[in-house]
Image 1 (cartoon, helix red, strand yellow):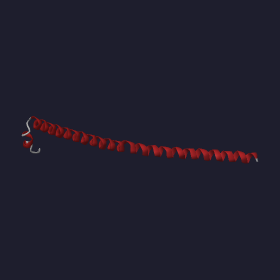
Image 2 (cartoon, helix red, strand yellow):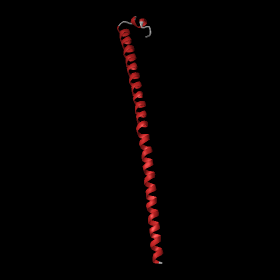
Image 3 (cartoon, helix red, strand yellow):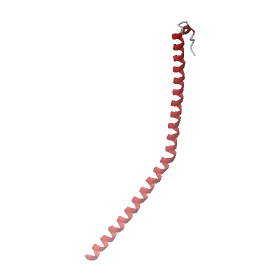
Image 4 (cartoon, one colour):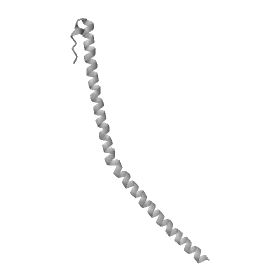
Length: 90
């Protein structure tokens, strides 16, 4: 903490100045602690999101690929059946 003795020579105004400095310093330290806590919470939530959402997105992508494969097989079967019916009619 800085040397506050010179402010004391101004009497009551000096005391108010000292109180203002102490208050500002305390407020600054409290806000820095709150900011650090908020940053830590952001990091925690980011890690949680990476742990939970990335595997879910991978599983969803695999499910979509499997569904697309099934739909392609169904479409191929329909095309084969349509071609067989067309051949029989001819």
